Image (cartoon, rainbow, N blue to C red; front, side):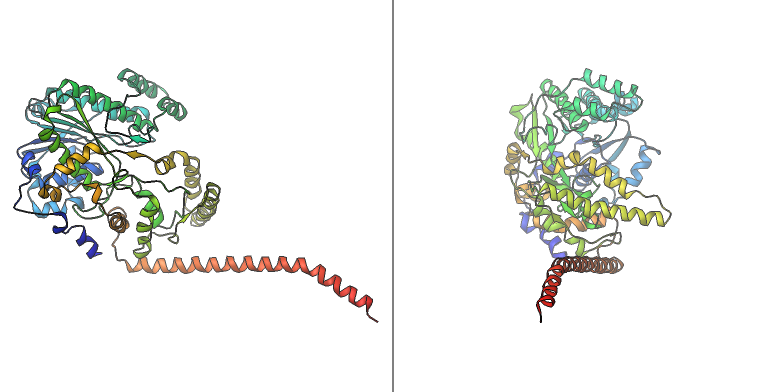
Amino acid sequence: MDDIYRRISEEDDFGEDETERSEIQEFFHGQTILLTGCTGFLGKCFVEKILRDCAGIKKLILIVRSHKVSAKERMKKYFQNEIFEKLRSYRPNFESKVCIVEGNLTEENLSVSIEDRKMLIDEVTMIYHNASNVKFATKVSDSLKCNVFGTKYMIELARECKKLVCFIYISTAYSHSYNKVIEEKCYPPPADLKMVQDMIDADEIAKNGIPLATVSETCKPWANIYTFGKSIAESLVEEFGKEKSYPCIIYRPSQIISTYQEPFPGWCGNYNGPALAFVGYGLGIIHTNTPVDYVQDYVPADMCTNSILALTWDTVTNRKQDNGKVFVFNYASSTVNPLSLKKFEDNAVPKGRDSPSIRMVGPNFLLRAPCWFLFYVFHFLLHGIPAVIADIVLMAMLRKPRAAAIFYKITINFKAILYWGISDWRITVKETQKMWDRMNNRDRFLFYNDLRTVDWSIFGYTYWFGIKKYLLKEPLDDPPARRKYMIIQFVFHSFKILVIVYILYYLLSYWLSLISPITGFVKIKYICTSP
């Protein structure tokens, strides 16, 4: 494991040359940066990276909403996260660069105080609008208020800022996922602000919100309310970019997964993307996969952060002649370094056996169904029956049964769940590649983000270990977990042997029952014909 970490952190492998100046660090020197969505997965990576490797910034302003406690109280706990350990060891006083502004994206004027708004207008030079409601199954009003009107309010703030040099909107590569080839360009939005407001009003008036069937029909061909709202937000940024002389950027990452290198390999901030599925594999809950094996478009979180910073530098510095239009950059691997789900699983899933979790409830194995019929058969046998057994055990322990209900909910929502795993998208990155080619060696090391050079086998190796350490909060080497896994394996293999013996016994008994009338007839005939 140490050798793997060394290989992806070795300075010589990435062309480190301390005599060469970093153009990106120089670009960010003296900048006052405003960031929304700092508490999310990508937000944490962005905050950590810019404070560690762009220490020359003047100030990092974070808009944070209060939630049970004040924004400043939330941020005290926020900076205790393990992702900031390396930053704290390098720059113990990094928090002196951070300014917390209490606000709420879903409210007019961002619910920012008059004093704070004046400070933002007078000082901010770069805006990174990263905050969004990423839940697919949520109230229509909650999703659209945050993703559409939150963007509208941020644009209104940007219009007032006196020193702004760029506006960056963090979207998603799947904002127009009805296209199988997604290019770096703006697409027509599905609705205008009036329709969005009408949907919010209808959702708030209805007792239980707009019915799911109505939402799905309204959003077509968009996959869900999240992508529907993000596409509309992109159109707002596009219109804003046409009226400004400084660049406006729409940044579209694909599925963001755990870190490749920084601040350490495998750090994972949430269960989104494939993380939840791999937790299921690792805990011995999920045992079968679909018969299709399409390319999965994954991008490591740290490389995603580095690409945002590098694209900002490249756009403002090298694309001045194109000011007055919006710049769209996809950040995706499917066209430059494709990775199949099977290849990723082959590298990552077995690590659940090498470093088992103390929470394992079943053996670690994964079957790929050869056809859809057998997939559903395997699903019933390997997931449905164990769910019923688990509920029986829970009831015997006087606890509330829930496994069968989860199994049922997953089964009836298979279409929505599988949409993201079995759709074969190709996301182009031609404009992003121009940035990769313009970076000097120093910046290629400090802000490593070239997806063409990612070794997916190494990433797959570290993926489970990161999930175990940072999501499950368990040690990598856990003797009690190993003992528990050995017991699970013994019980599982013993059960398999019993089943095989029973099947052989049944087949033998059936065969004997078929031949016994024949042998009896021969015996009777022999007795009757004998002298």
